[in-house]
Length: 366
Image (cartoon, rainbow, N blue to C red; front, top):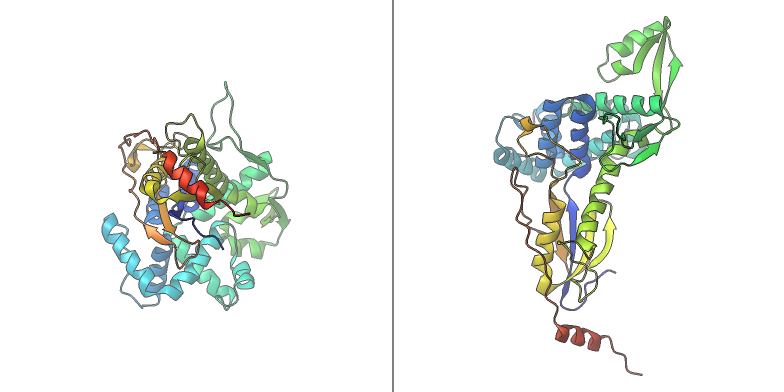
Protein backbone atom coordinates (compact mmCIF):
# COMPACT_ATOMS: atom_id res chain seq x y z
CA UNK A 1 0.00 0.00 0.00
CA UNK A 2 2.98 2.30 0.54
CA UNK A 3 4.98 2.81 -2.65
CA UNK A 4 7.62 5.29 -3.72
CA UNK A 5 6.93 8.02 -6.27
CA UNK A 6 8.58 8.18 -9.67
CA UNK A 7 12.38 8.57 -9.39
CA UNK A 8 12.23 7.99 -5.63
CA UNK A 9 12.85 5.20 -3.13
CA UNK A 10 11.80 4.51 0.42
CA UNK A 11 14.45 4.51 3.15
CA UNK A 12 14.21 3.18 6.69
CA UNK A 13 17.09 3.81 9.10
CA UNK A 14 16.75 2.37 12.60
CA UNK A 15 18.90 2.15 15.70
CA UNK A 16 20.41 -1.33 15.88
CA UNK A 17 19.40 -3.19 19.07
CA UNK A 18 19.13 0.12 20.90
CA UNK A 19 16.92 -1.02 23.79
CA UNK A 20 19.16 -4.00 24.55
CA UNK A 21 22.27 -1.78 24.37
CA UNK A 22 20.68 0.79 26.68
CA UNK A 23 19.71 -1.97 29.10
CA UNK A 24 23.36 -3.03 29.25
CA UNK A 25 24.40 0.58 29.71
CA UNK A 26 22.05 0.76 32.72
CA UNK A 27 23.96 -2.10 34.38
CA UNK A 28 26.85 0.34 34.74
CA UNK A 29 24.81 3.44 35.58
CA UNK A 30 22.51 1.85 38.17
CA UNK A 31 24.54 -1.08 39.50
CA UNK A 32 28.10 0.08 38.92
CA UNK A 33 28.78 -3.17 37.01
CA UNK A 34 31.21 -1.87 34.39
CA UNK A 35 32.48 -5.27 33.21
CA UNK A 36 28.99 -6.76 32.98
CA UNK A 37 27.70 -3.75 31.07
CA UNK A 38 30.60 -3.80 28.62
CA UNK A 39 30.13 -7.50 27.92
CA UNK A 40 26.38 -7.21 27.46
CA UNK A 41 26.64 -4.20 25.11
CA UNK A 42 29.24 -6.02 23.03
CA UNK A 43 27.10 -9.17 22.74
CA UNK A 44 24.01 -7.10 21.89
CA UNK A 45 25.87 -5.49 19.00
CA UNK A 46 27.23 -8.79 17.72
CA UNK A 47 24.04 -10.83 18.19
CA UNK A 48 22.57 -11.48 21.64
CA UNK A 49 19.88 -13.88 20.36
CA UNK A 50 22.41 -16.01 18.47
CA UNK A 51 24.73 -16.09 21.49
CA UNK A 52 21.95 -17.34 23.79
CA UNK A 53 20.91 -19.82 21.09
CA UNK A 54 24.46 -21.16 20.99
CA UNK A 55 24.37 -21.68 24.77
CA UNK A 56 21.19 -23.74 24.39
CA UNK A 57 22.58 -25.77 21.49
CA UNK A 58 25.76 -26.53 23.41
CA UNK A 59 23.67 -27.58 26.43
CA UNK A 60 21.77 -30.00 24.15
CA UNK A 61 25.10 -31.26 22.68
CA UNK A 62 24.03 -30.17 19.20
CA UNK A 63 27.14 -28.04 18.78
CA UNK A 64 30.54 -28.37 20.40
CA UNK A 65 30.54 -25.09 22.35
CA UNK A 66 28.75 -21.72 22.53
CA UNK A 67 30.24 -18.53 21.17
CA UNK A 68 33.49 -17.76 22.97
CA UNK A 69 33.38 -14.24 24.41
CA UNK A 70 37.18 -14.11 24.30
CA UNK A 71 37.17 -14.26 20.50
CA UNK A 72 37.73 -11.01 18.59
CA UNK A 73 34.61 -9.26 17.31
CA UNK A 74 34.95 -10.37 13.69
CA UNK A 75 35.37 -14.05 14.61
CA UNK A 76 32.53 -14.06 17.13
CA UNK A 77 30.24 -12.13 14.79
CA UNK A 78 30.85 -14.61 11.97
CA UNK A 79 30.17 -17.55 14.30
CA UNK A 80 26.91 -16.05 15.55
CA UNK A 81 25.74 -15.36 12.00
CA UNK A 82 26.23 -19.05 11.23
CA UNK A 83 24.19 -19.97 14.32
CA UNK A 84 21.37 -17.66 13.24
CA UNK A 85 21.41 -19.04 9.71
CA UNK A 86 21.76 -22.70 10.68
CA UNK A 87 19.17 -22.86 13.48
CA UNK A 88 16.33 -20.47 12.57
CA UNK A 89 13.65 -22.21 14.66
CA UNK A 90 15.72 -22.23 17.85
CA UNK A 91 16.81 -18.65 17.16
CA UNK A 92 13.21 -17.48 16.82
CA UNK A 93 12.22 -19.07 20.14
CA UNK A 94 15.21 -17.59 21.98
CA UNK A 95 14.44 -14.18 20.49
CA UNK A 96 11.03 -14.25 22.20
CA UNK A 97 12.64 -15.34 25.47
CA UNK A 98 15.20 -12.52 25.33
CA UNK A 99 12.76 -9.74 24.48
CA UNK A 100 10.14 -11.01 26.91
CA UNK A 101 12.59 -11.33 29.80
CA UNK A 102 14.09 -7.89 29.14
CA UNK A 103 10.68 -6.36 29.84
CA UNK A 104 9.56 -8.52 32.73
CA UNK A 105 7.78 -11.43 31.08
CA UNK A 106 7.90 -14.46 33.38
CA UNK A 107 8.19 -18.11 32.26
CA UNK A 108 4.52 -18.51 33.13
CA UNK A 109 3.71 -15.51 30.94
CA UNK A 110 5.70 -17.00 28.06
CA UNK A 111 3.64 -20.18 28.17
CA UNK A 112 0.41 -18.19 28.28
CA UNK A 113 1.30 -15.85 25.41
CA UNK A 114 3.25 -18.27 23.19
CA UNK A 115 1.92 -21.80 23.81
CA UNK A 116 3.08 -22.82 20.35
CA UNK A 117 6.70 -22.20 21.38
CA UNK A 118 6.73 -23.22 25.07
CA UNK A 119 5.13 -26.46 26.16
CA UNK A 120 5.64 -25.94 29.89
CA UNK A 121 6.79 -23.43 32.48
CA UNK A 122 9.83 -25.62 33.20
CA UNK A 123 10.91 -25.42 29.56
CA UNK A 124 10.51 -21.62 29.54
CA UNK A 125 12.52 -21.37 32.79
CA UNK A 126 15.33 -23.42 31.29
CA UNK A 127 15.48 -21.22 28.19
CA UNK A 128 15.43 -18.11 30.35
CA UNK A 129 18.35 -19.47 32.36
CA UNK A 130 20.45 -19.49 29.18
CA UNK A 131 19.88 -15.74 28.86
CA UNK A 132 20.92 -15.23 32.48
CA UNK A 133 24.18 -17.06 31.74
CA UNK A 134 24.95 -14.43 29.10
CA UNK A 135 23.54 -11.50 31.15
CA UNK A 136 23.88 -12.40 34.85
CA UNK A 137 23.29 -8.77 35.91
CA UNK A 138 19.85 -8.56 34.29
CA UNK A 139 17.72 -9.84 37.24
CA UNK A 140 19.61 -7.67 39.74
CA UNK A 141 19.14 -4.56 37.59
CA UNK A 142 15.43 -5.18 37.11
CA UNK A 143 14.94 -5.60 40.86
CA UNK A 144 16.96 -2.44 41.59
CA UNK A 145 14.86 -0.37 39.16
CA UNK A 146 11.61 -1.67 40.62
CA UNK A 147 12.72 -0.92 44.17
CA UNK A 148 13.82 2.57 43.17
CA UNK A 149 10.44 3.27 41.53
CA UNK A 150 8.61 2.09 44.64
CA UNK A 151 10.79 4.02 47.09
CA UNK A 152 10.62 7.44 45.40
CA UNK A 153 7.44 6.98 43.35
CA UNK A 154 9.01 7.87 40.00
CA UNK A 155 11.94 7.21 37.69
CA UNK A 156 14.06 9.63 35.71
CA UNK A 157 14.07 13.40 35.86
CA UNK A 158 17.15 15.55 36.45
CA UNK A 159 18.84 16.66 39.64
CA UNK A 160 19.00 20.46 39.44
CA UNK A 161 21.91 22.53 40.83
CA UNK A 162 23.18 22.80 43.48
CA UNK A 163 22.25 19.13 43.94
CA UNK A 164 24.62 16.32 43.02
CA UNK A 165 23.63 14.46 39.81
CA UNK A 166 22.22 11.01 40.49
CA UNK A 167 22.87 7.79 38.60
CA UNK A 168 19.07 7.57 38.28
CA UNK A 169 18.83 10.85 36.32
CA UNK A 170 17.41 10.45 32.83
CA UNK A 171 19.65 11.37 29.84
CA UNK A 172 16.86 13.49 28.36
CA UNK A 173 15.31 14.63 31.64
CA UNK A 174 12.19 12.50 31.18
CA UNK A 175 10.30 11.57 34.35
CA UNK A 176 7.49 9.08 34.85
CA UNK A 177 5.47 8.33 37.97
CA UNK A 178 4.66 4.80 39.13
CA UNK A 179 2.00 3.87 41.70
CA UNK A 180 1.88 0.07 41.78
CA UNK A 181 5.35 -1.38 41.27
CA UNK A 182 5.71 -4.02 43.97
CA UNK A 183 4.36 -5.05 47.34
CA UNK A 184 5.31 -7.36 50.18
CA UNK A 185 3.32 -10.52 50.83
CA UNK A 186 3.74 -12.53 54.07
CA UNK A 187 5.09 -16.04 53.55
CA UNK A 188 6.18 -19.01 55.62
CA UNK A 189 9.76 -19.92 56.50
CA UNK A 190 9.80 -22.99 54.24
CA UNK A 191 9.00 -20.86 51.17
CA UNK A 192 11.50 -18.24 52.31
CA UNK A 193 14.30 -20.80 52.57
CA UNK A 194 13.38 -22.28 49.18
CA UNK A 195 13.40 -18.87 47.47
CA UNK A 196 16.64 -17.79 49.13
CA UNK A 197 18.42 -20.78 47.53
CA UNK A 198 17.10 -19.93 44.06
CA UNK A 199 19.43 -17.43 42.30
CA UNK A 200 16.52 -16.01 40.28
CA UNK A 201 14.32 -15.33 43.33
CA UNK A 202 16.82 -14.82 46.16
CA UNK A 203 16.48 -11.04 45.88
CA UNK A 204 12.71 -11.27 46.21
CA UNK A 205 12.64 -12.62 49.77
CA UNK A 206 13.13 -10.27 52.73
CA UNK A 207 12.92 -10.46 56.51
CA UNK A 208 11.24 -7.48 58.15
CA UNK A 209 10.73 -7.26 61.90
CA UNK A 210 11.35 -10.98 62.30
CA UNK A 211 8.84 -12.04 59.62
CA UNK A 212 9.43 -13.32 56.10
CA UNK A 213 7.93 -11.56 53.09
CA UNK A 214 8.18 -12.21 49.37
CA UNK A 215 8.15 -9.41 46.86
CA UNK A 216 5.27 -9.59 44.38
CA UNK A 217 5.02 -7.48 41.25
CA UNK A 218 2.29 -4.88 40.75
CA UNK A 219 0.64 -3.45 37.66
CA UNK A 220 3.46 -0.94 37.06
CA UNK A 221 6.24 -3.49 37.48
CA UNK A 222 6.90 -4.12 33.80
CA UNK A 223 6.47 -0.45 32.92
CA UNK A 224 9.18 0.45 35.44
CA UNK A 225 11.87 -1.79 33.93
CA UNK A 226 10.91 -0.69 30.41
CA UNK A 227 11.13 3.02 31.26
CA UNK A 228 14.85 3.75 30.88
CA UNK A 229 15.55 1.80 27.64
CA UNK A 230 12.35 2.85 25.86
CA UNK A 231 12.26 6.50 26.89
CA UNK A 232 15.99 6.99 26.24
CA UNK A 233 15.48 5.50 22.77
CA UNK A 234 12.63 7.95 22.20
CA UNK A 235 14.79 10.86 23.34
CA UNK A 236 17.73 9.93 21.07
CA UNK A 237 15.43 9.59 18.06
CA UNK A 238 13.85 13.00 18.72
CA UNK A 239 17.30 14.53 19.09
CA UNK A 240 18.32 13.10 15.71
CA UNK A 241 15.10 14.42 14.14
CA UNK A 242 15.82 17.90 15.46
CA UNK A 243 19.28 17.87 13.86
CA UNK A 244 17.99 16.54 10.56
CA UNK A 245 14.84 18.63 10.13
CA UNK A 246 15.45 21.95 11.88
CA UNK A 247 16.19 24.61 9.23
CA UNK A 248 19.05 26.11 11.25
CA UNK A 249 20.87 22.78 11.67
CA UNK A 250 24.06 22.16 9.64
CA UNK A 251 22.72 18.62 9.04
CA UNK A 252 19.40 19.86 7.61
CA UNK A 253 17.75 17.56 5.05
CA UNK A 254 14.22 18.92 5.44
CA UNK A 255 14.07 19.99 1.78
CA UNK A 256 15.52 16.80 0.27
CA UNK A 257 12.18 15.71 -1.23
CA UNK A 258 11.88 18.33 -3.99
CA UNK A 259 12.00 21.18 -1.49
CA UNK A 260 9.84 19.40 1.08
CA UNK A 261 10.61 17.08 3.98
CA UNK A 262 11.48 13.47 3.10
CA UNK A 263 10.26 12.26 6.51
CA UNK A 264 7.13 10.12 6.27
CA UNK A 265 7.03 9.10 9.93
CA UNK A 266 9.22 8.11 12.88
CA UNK A 267 8.55 4.46 13.74
CA UNK A 268 9.55 3.36 17.26
CA UNK A 269 13.37 3.48 16.89
CA UNK A 270 13.54 4.30 13.17
CA UNK A 271 13.07 7.09 10.66
CA UNK A 272 10.99 6.26 7.57
CA UNK A 273 11.88 8.48 4.61
CA UNK A 274 10.81 9.08 1.01
CA UNK A 275 13.90 10.19 -0.92
CA UNK A 276 14.57 11.13 -4.59
CA UNK A 277 17.14 8.87 -6.25
CA UNK A 278 19.51 11.75 -7.06
CA UNK A 279 20.12 12.53 -3.37
CA UNK A 280 19.48 9.06 -1.94
CA UNK A 281 23.08 8.15 -1.05
CA UNK A 282 23.73 11.57 0.44
CA UNK A 283 20.62 11.48 2.62
CA UNK A 284 21.51 7.98 3.84
CA UNK A 285 25.04 9.07 4.73
CA UNK A 286 23.82 12.12 6.66
CA UNK A 287 21.09 10.26 8.56
CA UNK A 288 23.44 7.39 9.46
CA UNK A 289 26.11 9.81 10.69
CA UNK A 290 23.71 11.86 12.80
CA UNK A 291 22.08 8.81 14.41
CA UNK A 292 25.50 7.27 15.19
CA UNK A 293 27.02 10.48 16.51
CA UNK A 294 28.33 11.09 20.03
CA UNK A 295 25.72 11.19 22.81
CA UNK A 296 27.07 13.51 25.49
CA UNK A 297 24.16 12.46 27.72
CA UNK A 298 25.54 8.89 27.78
CA UNK A 299 29.13 9.11 29.06
CA UNK A 300 31.16 5.90 28.84
CA UNK A 301 33.91 4.81 31.25
CA UNK A 302 37.46 4.82 29.80
CA UNK A 303 37.95 1.08 30.34
CA UNK A 304 35.34 0.31 27.66
CA UNK A 305 37.60 1.75 24.96
CA UNK A 306 34.69 3.09 22.89
CA UNK A 307 35.39 6.79 23.27
CA UNK A 308 33.95 9.35 25.69
CA UNK A 309 30.30 8.48 25.06
CA UNK A 310 28.08 5.58 24.05
CA UNK A 311 27.22 5.51 20.35
CA UNK A 312 24.34 3.51 18.89
CA UNK A 313 24.78 1.71 15.58
CA UNK A 314 22.19 1.81 12.79
CA UNK A 315 20.79 -0.45 10.11
CA UNK A 316 19.20 0.72 6.86
CA UNK A 317 16.76 -0.78 4.39
CA UNK A 318 15.50 0.60 1.10
CA UNK A 319 13.08 -0.29 -1.66
CA UNK A 320 10.30 0.84 -3.96
CA UNK A 321 7.53 -0.48 -1.70
CA UNK A 322 7.28 -0.86 2.07
CA UNK A 323 7.12 -4.63 1.80
CA UNK A 324 9.59 -6.86 3.64
CA UNK A 325 10.09 -8.78 0.40
CA UNK A 326 11.10 -5.58 -1.40
CA UNK A 327 12.95 -3.65 1.33
CA UNK A 328 16.58 -4.79 1.22
CA UNK A 329 19.45 -4.02 3.56
CA UNK A 330 21.79 -1.19 2.65
CA UNK A 331 25.39 -0.99 3.93
CA UNK A 332 25.91 1.79 6.47
CA UNK A 333 29.14 3.19 7.88
CA UNK A 334 30.12 1.40 11.13
CA UNK A 335 30.69 3.08 14.48
CA UNK A 336 34.30 4.26 14.69
CA UNK A 337 35.32 4.70 18.36
CA UNK A 338 37.44 7.63 19.49
CA UNK A 339 37.02 9.43 16.16
CA UNK A 340 34.77 12.43 15.66
CA UNK A 341 33.26 12.31 12.15
CA UNK A 342 34.01 15.13 9.74
CA UNK A 343 30.91 17.24 9.31
CA UNK A 344 30.15 17.96 5.68
CA UNK A 345 27.37 20.60 5.49
CA UNK A 346 24.59 18.83 3.58
CA UNK A 347 23.51 21.38 1.01
CA UNK A 348 20.97 19.52 -1.10
CA UNK A 349 20.95 20.26 -4.85
CA UNK A 350 17.68 21.90 -5.83
CA UNK A 351 16.97 22.17 -9.53
CA UNK A 352 13.95 24.26 -10.58
CA UNK A 353 13.54 22.17 -13.71
CA UNK A 354 13.09 19.04 -11.60
CA UNK A 355 10.37 20.72 -9.60
CA UNK A 356 8.61 21.89 -12.78
CA UNK A 357 8.65 18.32 -14.12
CA UNK A 358 7.27 17.02 -10.85
CA UNK A 359 4.48 19.61 -10.88
CA UNK A 360 3.62 18.55 -14.43
CA UNK A 361 3.17 14.96 -13.31
CA UNK A 362 0.55 16.11 -10.80
CA UNK A 363 -1.56 18.04 -13.29
CA UNK A 364 -5.09 16.81 -13.96
CA UNK A 365 -7.10 17.18 -17.17
CA UNK A 366 -10.46 18.81 -16.49
